[in-house]
Image (cartoon, rainbow, N blue to C red; front, side):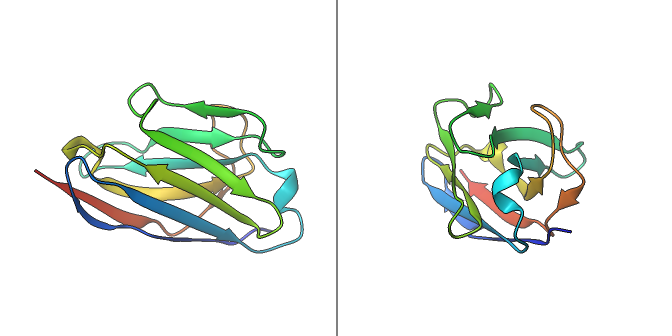
Length: 119
């Protein structure tokens, strides 16, 4: 069982930056592929980024590639999403995810953190 708690969301102007954090409970964090997904109002949840269990491999949606960076600290049971060059269309609730395969979310989800980008 893994519990995930996101933080770091907020309101930012277009072009700005935010860093999301996701703290995980449990001793098996380092064995999980971790990811971030997002859901905008009226839209389905979509894939943003994932990172392999050892942190070596990262994967991104085309819409965020070159602007967002996913990283993890297995000693702290935490995964991060650094978001630069934010756009209005990045506005969404961002969810942390654990236990998935590349491109597919796993069974563990956080409660979400709101990111709002103003023009």
